[in-house]
Amino acid sequence: MKVRVSHILACLDQFAPFSLAESWDNVGLLTGNPDRDVTSILLGLDPSIRLLDEAIARGANTIITHHPLIFHPLTTVITNTPTGIFLEKALAHKINIISCHTNLDHAASGVSDALGWALGLTSLRPLRPDAIAATGATGLGRIGIFEPPLSGTAFLDKLLQTLQLATIQITGRIPEQVKTVALCGGSGSELAETARTRGADLYLSAEIKHSTARWAEECGFCIIDGTHYGTEQPVMPFLQGKLQTLAAAKSWPLAIFLTQTEKHPFRSYNKTTVPLTQQERPNMQPQE
Image 1: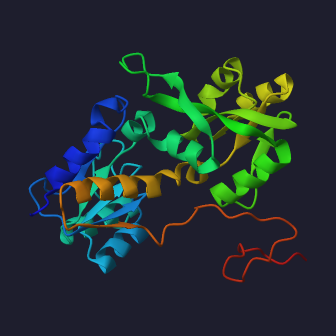
Image 2 (image 1 turned 90 degrees about the vertical axis):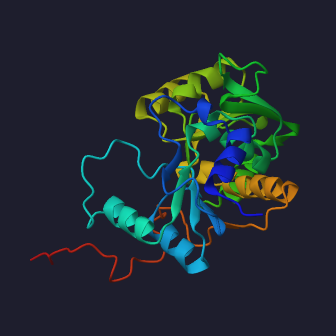
């Protein structure tokens, strides 16, 4: 059976309905042809040129990313800019680009669920449930528990391992014991007060605002910034598994790859790290 782009969109809509996306978002098929046959699929968080080159090398003609390739309306397509280079190459190679962004954030078993499961939390439920959700299973963020609870140190060690980070930023008081954890994969500064109100021992998210960090410091409430990439990356293996299960149920002979080239965009640097290479050093004039 031939698998078309429209079939993939229908599968995604089953477990991450596009109707859940925020009104300001841009999800679904962003470039390509819904009637085109799918050779194979490559999954990644970001629609980067590196990811596109990996798809071409693998022979995958469909890319599914979390973050949208086209977020704001384009008035021009200049082909010596990152977006222009990506679009020109994707169209030239007839590669379909699909985004599952805030629909996957809100979905039951979405971004924050995947983060919670990766950490070992149980009894996950939405931190801010969607008002229109009939079952209460959709919404932003999640809150869950460790059973048995972890010490603060054990939790931090587990967090660094799960997020594959060398360092994290923490504000507020680190709890001696961590049982109830609120979290939101990606940017979630606005849910910090909700996390505290709902009885979380700490809140894990990313892109925490300075004012929110100061508030947490004054309250003694622990907030951890696990970076945008770090807190969202766990959803990609989950998305791969979900698509593979649906493809198998439909007997689709379809390979679904997880990117092997995508990496965290930030690197840690401090006085104990290996010095910058000559190529990475800024252009500095010698002092007289």
